[in-house]
Length: 253
Ligand SMILES: C[S@@+](CC[C@H](N)C(=O)[O-])C[C@H]1O[C@@H](n2cnc3c(N)ncnc32)[C@H](O)[C@@H]1O
Image (cartoon, rainbow, N blue to C red; front, side, top):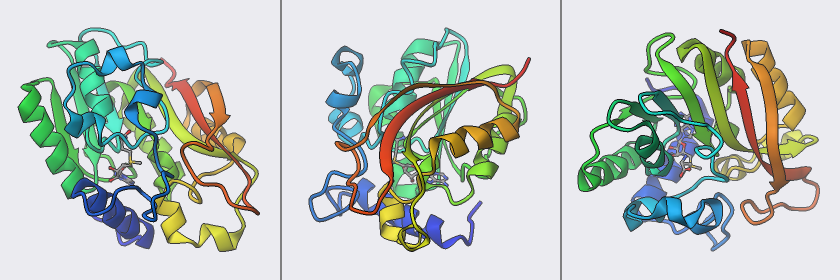
């Protein structure tokens, strides 16, 4: 499904250009503002065996897989799967009896992810085109929803959390890495679509973020860790403090 929201268009354009190698970083201008090299986000042993097409297209702000406690046979949904790094890592943990579904709205990202899937020869990962505000996934279909530096990009975060709740099985788990703030951006900064697409001004206050999760029905919401995001996004004067947080939650059984 394609939305008319102008933010979606700007975000799709930005990540399409990155997937096609037309821009070196999310911000252009050489600023590494929307992700860190995979070697700084993940335990490097975890990355062994993944091609550079995957590790070099890591645009996340943390490692949501390691806190997900994945088990063989589980079905996992990765929101905004990008080049597929977390989907491929999760696929190793759920094994051949499990399944990982990656959803992304940017065609060029899906092409890269599918090319890497073919190269790796994995059969328990599938990538679907769609928006995280209207997931192409059945009700109560997945054990775990994970996401890495994507929900901050959504113009309708309440819809994302409602969709996550819908597709999770009762008792299902959430494991997120995302950019959050302490305080809010001014309306002027929020209106800067380029900074939004660079994972900066779409981020919301951590308490508001977990509040939206609670409103969607999630329980056991925990901010597992929250570190200054200065190495991931570029903060400018007048902006609130910006963090990379890992958040877990559960849909009641
Ligand atoms: C910052 S990148 C993160 C990619 C990946 N999770 C990773 O860790 O490398 C954001 C990704 O989310 C996708 N995305 C952003 N907003 C989306 C939305 N509303 N629906 C679906 N995909 C979205 C983009 O196309 C892009 O691939």
